[in-house]
Length: 249
Image 1 (cartoon, rainbow, N blue to C red):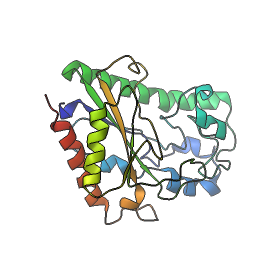
Image 2 (cartoon, one colour):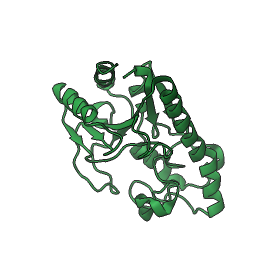
Image 3 (cartoon, one colour):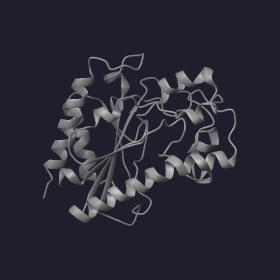
Image 4 (cartoon, rainbow, N blue to C red):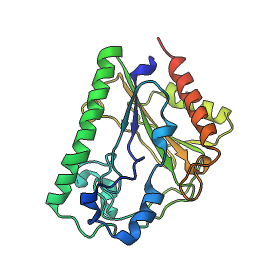
């Protein structure tokens, strides 16, 4: 597989909430939610100098591109954490309210362009290389957050899709991370991985895998980089590059 056929999808790295939307939120809970919910520095952890990178430009608190657009299809919408959050990490109110017009405005401004870009980059890789590998890049809290169902906290979580994640890929990543001394689980505490709707279940040459890094490996409690950041960056690059290049046709 050609390394440049890779698309790194980085949806939760930003802490940005544009000024015109700040008044939607309760000010007294915003800072804590940004600290707990942001996959800080994943845009740097997964910057390896090859492939395409799609970094969502605003905070997931404003809009989460990894949720279904339609709340009726999104399980997390039941607790106020659909594509546009109403509740925060502690399941307490995050916004003052959200009418349908405001929600649609946010989705059109951020959600829709992001998914069009993901589809475009995937199509470009398919056209150029005949295949595309999407790596869904995340991190997670070392302590389960109140809304999270699974309390397991390995060093690395690998999320898979039964159609779009080939067994060789998940097995190779798991073996490599474990070989580096890290604890690894498949689909725990989080499962699945993103695939553009256009190609979901229809294009066998679109591969996807989610890589979730436990924040204790690279972040301090205040959300700043720890001394482990460089080590984890180089490990991620070595594992991901080796597993892609090793299978380059």
